[in-house]
Amino acid sequence: TLGPKYTFGDLFTHGNVVTRDYVIQQDIAFESEETFDYNKIMDSRSLLRQRTIYHSATLNVIGVDDDLVAKSDGTDSTGTVETPVPIVIDIEEAPIRWVDVAVGLSLNSNGWLLTGEVEYVNANLYGTGIDLRMLLMPEMRLSHGSENVAGQRFNQNWFTLVTLTVPLLPMYGLDLVT
Image 1 (cartoon, one colour):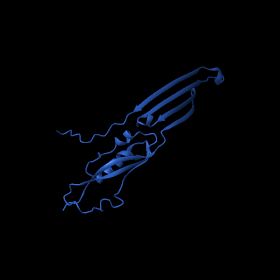
Image 2: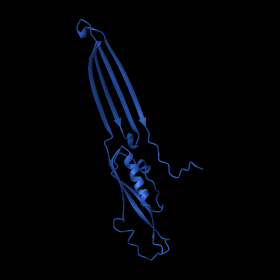
Image 3: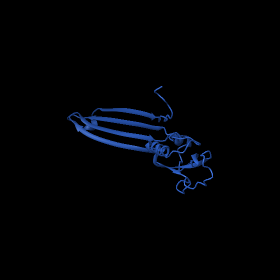
Image 4: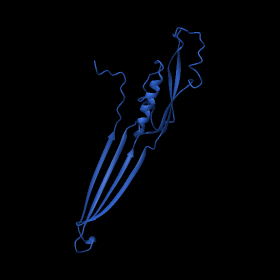
């Protein structure tokens, strides 16, 4: 005889202060009311943990640890009654903004070379999961001859780079073979 049928119930997110709910739900490999499959829980957990905007991400199945699946009342032996299993997604967000600074100084036969690098990163722009990076790389060359360095020519170059990384949405049910 068949036992009761379990489906995915409501999704509850917890701990996402900056990240919007729809960004988290993009990485969930199942829909509400779909037949419960623990492999889809593991797939979703893996997708969430691949993002760099979280320190940790876990999916907790409510009731399974409390023997919800095992506590069937036994009245439905046909498997036609569906019992929804709610899921709680616990998120611990990583720091989203930081600045990296680096400075270098070298001396060669042509003079002094002072280089720098300043990078601003916003890893979760407005809670959308978009990664924004701005890189500024100044370079200063001071030439010297037989006189002092301060009296010689001064050359300055700047390099600026701005990148915006938009994560691709996972596609489920896409059949490329047919």
